[in-house]
Length: 191
Image (cartoon, rainbow, N blue to C red):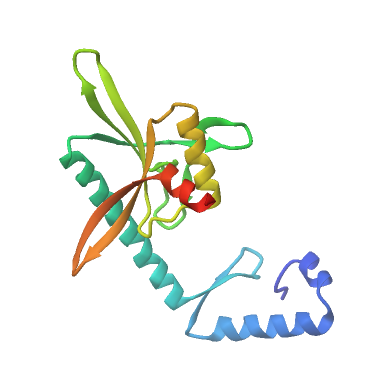
């Protein structure tokens, strides 16, 4: 029985390979790990069950906070919709977001754009002017380097007047939403 592809087997030294294979076999027999096998009977992925559970709760917490942000914006008289585009920094343009396939529920995930929401509010009904902002939901309020570049791009191209980062603030057991302009976060990082 073959454990992995021939290419991987030839790149490691014999002793390293032997230790790695024995460790994978130990994990496959352990109750602590969940092992996936591919079509040829080789070990695919091995995940720690405690990590699987924490990942599931983190995703659920993120989704519930995203819903809370949406309801908070709507209560402040903003019209909110899911943003289904993304920024391609190589092409320097806005492109449709790629859909992700969830193999467990057999569905395509649509809402994978950046930022998460587009929100707009009427400024002046006589002139028909709107304030249009992008809202990225982050529980910790931190953006990656790539996300900061995307925010800068969206504001520089006048796609959004501002990009807000919604972060979670806990007071006791209650959770509140705080909004911060992404460009002010970027400006603080540069100093």
